[in-house]
Image (cartoon, rainbow, N blue to C red; front, side, top):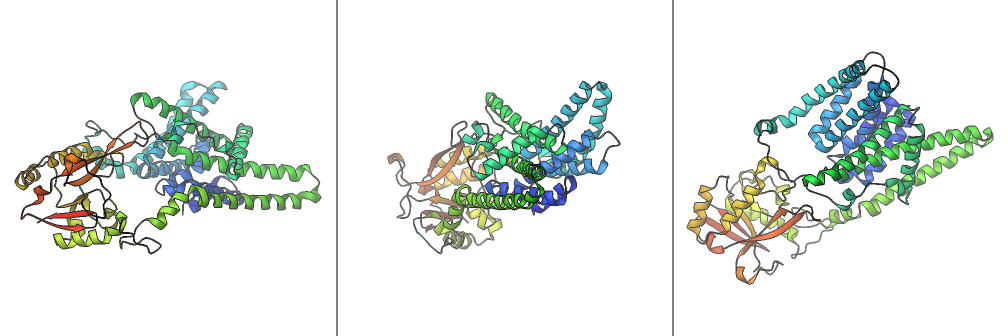
Length: 472
């Protein structure tokens, strides 16, 4: 679907035959990145043609193209409710375009304030339309935080992998995709002064590298801007630009050589293009997506089997079906009526349970009080009797779990090792923010004394490596 929409958008700014090739290049770039983050892929795939429309709308001398500005605003608003990072980048890109266009006009002798006024009036409808759409997703959050007056701290930006610490240079890869990106970069640099499409796409490339610089500077404030998430945008832009550049090269060769060789040139170009597309596609499946394909075959279904019909009792996923059944039988409730404290987070993918704690602070809702909940779990582990533990649950400021799924090191299927001081206890693994280390997550265990569940208020069952405990 994203590729179809990309084709439609490209059809607005270039001829349909060229738009089709641009959409194919977009899809090939998506094979390397987009399928890993499907929620981020649409805004990345559509950015390039939207940027061309924005460049044209801002540069236009006549009346403002209202519907074009509205469409750009719809895209920016869509990005704001699907992938906030792309929303911020799109805003930076459009503002950068306005600044570049304004600076060029003033340099040509136009008056400063009339130029600023015209560009502002072009940016205004984009901002208003995107604001209305953004509020659909953001208004509840803004109200909950009193419009950012009491904005909770979030660890979402605390991630700096290797590809975020270095500037991306896809055009220097010794692959078919690298050659395509190199051709795109050359075309952008050569054609940016006389071609609107090239100028707007080069602005995206510049904005990506500016974002990397800003992300590096953000380290001073002990955070990042997740610049590596823009690699997919850079790849898409350079790949599409490479298609445009190669098409111009083929046209030049057809004109440069004798007309008798035009057909041969076209045939060779088509053959090389198909081979390149096949190489990129196979490379994505065989290399870039290899780990994901492996996981798809080895991850366990809610039935306790994987895609190959295998079941290994030593693998935690093989007990999923038994866990779900135990929770249902011990509680007698529908899944959506149960609140779980567990680190087996896949359970909540298979059944609509509520979870007391998110898997990591980086993916936790800023309004979810991740650190406070972790501290509350720590407090519970200090209980030594069931009466003390139940008192803690009753006095908690949070809605407390009615199901505890804890690792049982005494199980023959468990690989958890206990320190001598915690012998005989049940284990829950928690995670903390370890930025700027890589990995950025610190795993640590907390221990529950089984005696705190020795009460008529609790019922429990052993399920493989887990002890499932339900509060009556």
